[in-house]
Length: 263
Ligand SMILES: [Zn+2]
Image: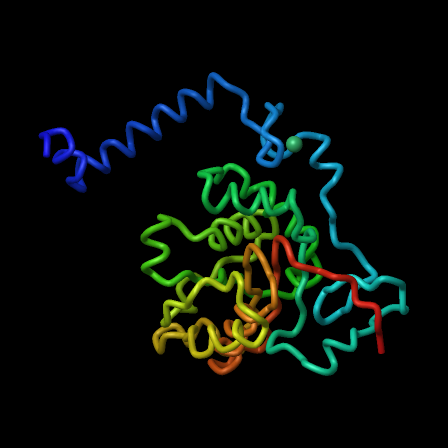
């Protein structure tokens, strides 16, 4: 093994190389316009190009007041979906900004894996709007935690990035560290609904020393994507068990097939 590869393998030099890369990226960022995270054309300012922006599918009323899933037709105000009544979640209300589709997936993936942390303020602003009602009644935001091993590998938690942006937008503070992921769960991708539920069973816990920040408080869980809802449901169950007064959920993008049946 050459000296160079030996050096590259040492953690300190790897850190220096990361720094050099980050500095180079900043220099390039100053010189080159950022790219649209979805179609990769250069854009003015930050975020999506106008064409991708116009194709984003924002979630608006009418939707189920509990689950936040859009109705295919307007059943009238305050109506719950059959799903919410047949299988009520552990949280009170969920709100999401956009449907999870090609463009919102590109935003989520750019934030999560593409070092596009600059997208978080824009995404958080949209979330602030979608969650206005639940944020107005909230005491604190709780980002869905990663297991420490995954956070170490990824270097940051995308839900915490979004929560920081939502907090800046709404003025609702973040209750950091009140929820811990105590079980390293398998990736939810490719699992069925019931497999997802058992995958997160017992995965979240409120540490004894954090209970004071949870008891009697109205909390809003923040996450990037909601698929089956098993993850936020597991988080809400842990917060309720620790004595939270109310748990709502605010998501950037959700898988949302319109609900046809309302009660
Ligand atoms: Zn684009």
